[in-house]
Image (cartoon, rainbow, N blue to C red; front, side, top):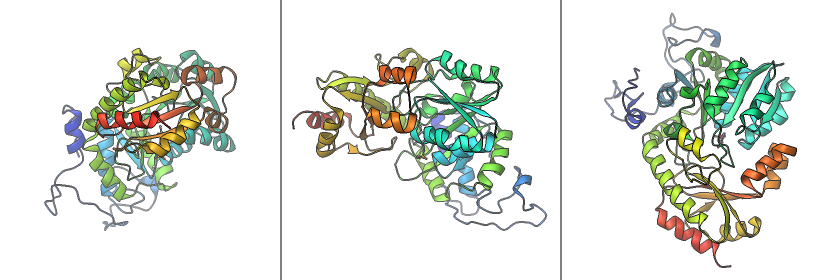
Length: 403
Ligand SMILES: *Cc1c(COP(=O)(O)O)cnc(C)c1O
């Protein structure tokens, strides 16, 4: 499937990997659920170690057409050579880390990142002999100080979940490469509409496809995008053998979601910027963090690195957050009080700082102070959906005021 990278993002998001079906003439791709495929006995053998681009489809844990078409599209949209899909974002992340690092290697991880990654790194990786050091990725000196002679991978997330702190990807990629390490960027919150980490020097990009890329909250999925050779190795080690493959049905849904990615991201960002400005001027609100607002502490970096400020924001209330959370849960009608993000419906929930700091991140000393300086105590994490912005504003207005 050839890729014409001169075409615009929205054109590629629709057309790449989706030729008309030669056997049925169907314009929209068929969903291939089959777990096995007829093959010529001279064309394949039975070891994942000899898998290559010419290997035909044999068994769906190795490769299958609907999932492969999504991989081709994702590689195109991130300007990468190839992509691998997994059953969830965490499936992709665990596969990349465990399929790339070995006992004795060292990983430098953002001290605030997706809680599942923080817990995997802190609780599970040391058992495999992989050492982990966390650093504040908005501070380049902190990242540099965490690097050791055995550092093999640096892991950034920008904007980071949940506080929307940014990482200067080009600068951190220089730190990684001068240390002989590879840089991975979890770009779930940014999406390729906003940021192309590979073009800024990253070696791998990971996505939870569950979020914006699918965009409709009805399929889990994950992906790793990067260089062809590295991903061919990862397919053998961490996809075929770990086995966490994406279901073709989910691949088919995510592919369809991608058709409208750019359009949706424009609307998410437009809505989020209106809601953020409204909240910033609301008397009950203490602080709003949104990369598209000039008040974001790294606004200049956001302007440079994000073509779209995305649909995530956080806010803090003057009144006790836990109290406000109960009221919002009871009174909100358009927003849903729920976790996850990046879908058509607006979502919010309250994260007490104490919980997340003690359980997932275990921040102390300077790292704790830096978190609190940035995000304060207790935040509402909001994923702004595609509803009418005036209805979103009115819903927050009625829920924030009153009993
Ligand atoms: C949700 C999320 C993940 C995990 O993805 P799943 O699909 O839920 O496994 C990883 N990173 C970030 C930034 C996320 O938001």
